[in-house]
Amino acid sequence: MTAIHRTWIFLLVMLFSLSACVPSQLPNDSATGTPSPVLTEAASATTTPTLAASSLNVDKEALNGLQVKVWHPYFGAEASLFESQVGQFNSSNEWGIVVSAEGKGNFSELFLQTDAALKSAGGPHVALAFPEHALGWDEFVVDLNPYLNDPVYGLSAMERSDFANAIWLQDELGGVRYGVPAQRTARLLLYNQTWARELGFSSPPSTPAEFEQQACAANQALRADASSDNDSFGGWLIDTDAMTPLSWLIAFGGGAQEKEGYRFLKPENIAAFKYLKILQQDGCAWTASSELSVYDRFAARQALFATVGLGELADQSRAFLALGSRDEWTVLPFPSDENDTVVVYGSSYVMFNSNDATQLASWLFMRWMLSAENEARWVRSTGLFPLRTSTLDLLADYSAEHPQWASAVQLLPGATIPPRLASWRVVRVMLGDGFRDMFDSIRHPDLTDGQVSLILKQMDDIANELNQ
Image 1 (cartoon, rainbow, N blue to C red):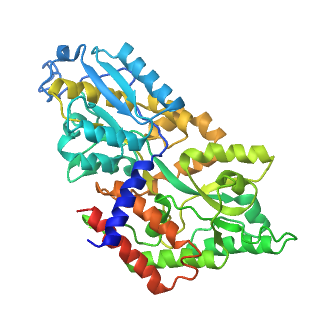
Image 2: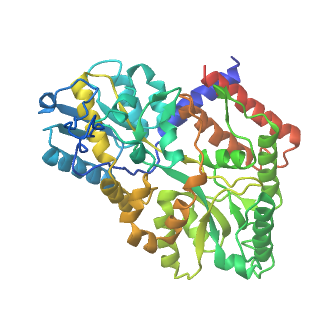
Image 3: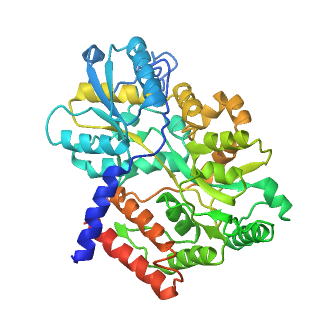
């Protein structure tokens, strides 16, 4: 390992320790607890139906009074909502299970404390963590398939089909289910429809070429006005959250993961990075200082396109209201010549090894949190994706009041997911850092094809070292 690589890895670990944020949202399965027993087919017209038996070998009486410890990353309003739902479960569940919730304030702290606790005693029975965290805890994590498939306590095939593929499949790998979804979000492009129409565009861009055309037209319009202060504005406001470069790479037919490792150096990724760097060089994409928020800049027409997380749409709406702007705006996937791209990601309920009764009690709480009714409360609080299609029936008013959120939800059927590797928790930090470095106009004023390839090759080397 070279000294440069050792330095990168050290910096990445430090960066990861400081990084902490993805919004939150929870689902829930049944407000009444255990589903009605499934009846087996009658052997004859006179045979008494037989109640299906659980395959989990736990007597119902053994659940009474069991304590389940849950660690979560929430704070503020989200922590209050989660803990109120824990209280509701404790007071209403038919088994007498008692759940205690302990907040860690953010995902980084939750990971660090859980990782340490799993190697000693006194850790949680359940943690709300990222899927890549669960993969790293493989030896301690309970495969949830036996619980999902249990005829008494599980979820039916129809109930499981209520979850979008991009939401449901992120927790599965190699036939093992490492968790069930707790919250899902995505990075999305913001698009000012009113300004675009004034620039002569009647529809949003659906390909990279159309995106470039509209971004450059916005910059040219600002260059042509009376002020010279805004000549560098107008196109895409560059965003270096790791999910943004990942989305662009996938939109160009590339990506990060290849088999059980990473491959950044490939033609599609070279094309993506070259395209974005040329956008910047042509004045059609730009980086901003932190003096103003992305929301304020987008509302003030400093950018035709910006990028935010799904849970930030309410902040963007407030920025337009604060300015008194009547501009219409919406959200878009990342444009592609093939399939437009939205990368869905977020946290999951992860169960750890204990004993049969405590694990079943933990599962029953997780399943209860997956009900459409509980999840609808989380959507209203966080503005994240509904995990279940049936939840939308409870959110008709919310959808009507939040049209940009409704547009984002319509993108779920075609969404994809990030790499399913334990090392993704640090590799994603490296990806965001490398993407940010590419737009450093002092270090890289004019990137050549060879320099783009060199950046991607360095990413390959570092990522695959981190993956060992």
